[in-house]
Image (cartoon, rainbow, N blue to C red; front, side, top):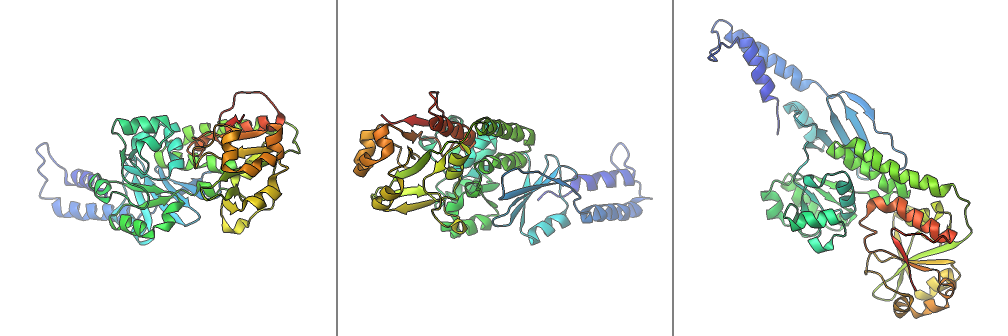
Length: 395
């Protein structure tokens, strides 16, 4: 805990009239101590003064509030968790710290360091913000990363593997002074981990970017991490690059083409996206129509639904375009390999017409790829021949 001890010393020094050898004048000693205590007490009781809040365009699951002196309050609105960020070389009074504790507001200090990053979708944002130096521990092993900078940092030993979300290496992260664990929603299946981390005085922050209804809401979480690291300008620039892509593709006329985005599970079911998920929204923004336009219940906040092959066949056999999601099983390299997984796909319109595509393996970890993926889907819908970022044609 950082209390204003340095300021207390300076107040004492000035009021005690220290000479060059550091000896106080006995005449003013008692009076000076009383004045110093009063100054520190007044300083400790002074609250933070609110300045403004960060304006967000699409994201709904976090807020950023700014206070005088460079203090920042981050809130994840789905669970109400709050984190007060103290600026570099800044301090916080004992009384305010205690108030933060009473209100269950975690206090974090810049420069950020020794973070345990389990939410893999956030790594791309830390990398883009030149913030990998803040991460000391990863929930993914080196070979599990498609983000080159993260993989290289682990190879150099700058980021250490500290276990999965449900089995963290407590000894490693505690002995190396982990300051914050950034989890994804999987941690809801292991509440005992959150409890134990907090018992070790390690705050837990949950990334809810996957629950944003608008694709660019997911991208806008770069502003959340920009505020955490004190890199707001860089975050704004990154976000603007993605919104510019959306502006380009939105300028074209919409098509009436339908798209099915799916994955074949190991037990033979077909996993598709709920209509309220961000992927159907990307298809819409690209100028197309998601084939299962009314599927699911948006109140459940689920992103995927498993269905029987027969149900998928009835709903998607006439889709103009099929996109296979490779993020789970590593994908397929051609149509024949896809048909090996689900032979009834041979009767689908898109297969017969050669409009079958697959996502690249790194799409899920590339959180800042949303704009480029929308651009890729737009090109497919328009029948354009161009170099793709995250889609490739299955032949």
